[in-house]
Length: 358
Image (cartoon, rainbow, N blue to C red):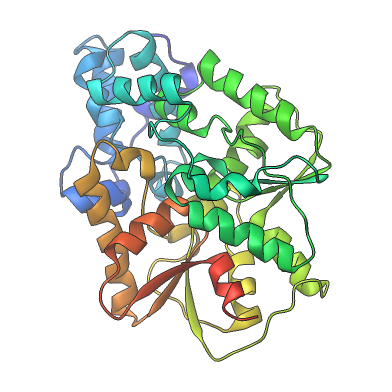
């Protein structure tokens, strides 16, 4: 098996501290011991030592969200996501990927996205390449939450910002999740970078795409010459510069920290600053770097019941602190939380929060 010494070192150095057992959103949803970074490391160790075959652990590898909760709490300081991503590449290249993963990859080949969908016709009027500023919304929003795209554009327009919306919204994030660092993933990333380099500024809506562009693109030698800025950061600058007029209210909002912002990009404050511009920040349990994931759209395609439970578990954290309005930074969590919202509670996106306070 062709994995790096770095991955082998991570696999071999688990101290069995059990921290990952308590923080994995999938493990908490299923109650299964296999759904922990420790269990995946043990399985990987058996494969590395030729004690079992790669196909025997393939399904378990794809039960990881890559949210990094285990990494954040690992007492050894290692990052289990590293070996998980390398194993995904090996699984795909060796032809032992689960059937449901191959089905998603076939949809991607046929339709350009793993959901096998066409973009909502309601977005047709938004596509243009006229502005020097581009809004990159990503595939989760484009195919699963078109209302988020419309609201994001509407909010920017209210600030006098005209944005280009290209039909290519594929950063390579879906292929990265499903296949790791394959040539296909890097080709998608290169095509995305070439498109983005037509603009001076790129506002990235989904922090998962933003993280890929700022971290993996650099690692792969893919350069984005445009200025890349996260959606939250851009909105905060518009408000502070007086270009986006919002009003302060007594409304209480609770931020659902997205892992890509809080853990990968080390930014758990910008979303809260946006809340403070329009209302009162009310915290629930497990926030910032310790926040629980609330949804993952690709995994919802092949383990929907588990992802529903993940969202319900996150709602329980909000209910325990009587947090009535959850504010999301990411379309995957927006979709999952909206579908599972208990009576008397609601979920809105950052842009919806600002729009209702103008």
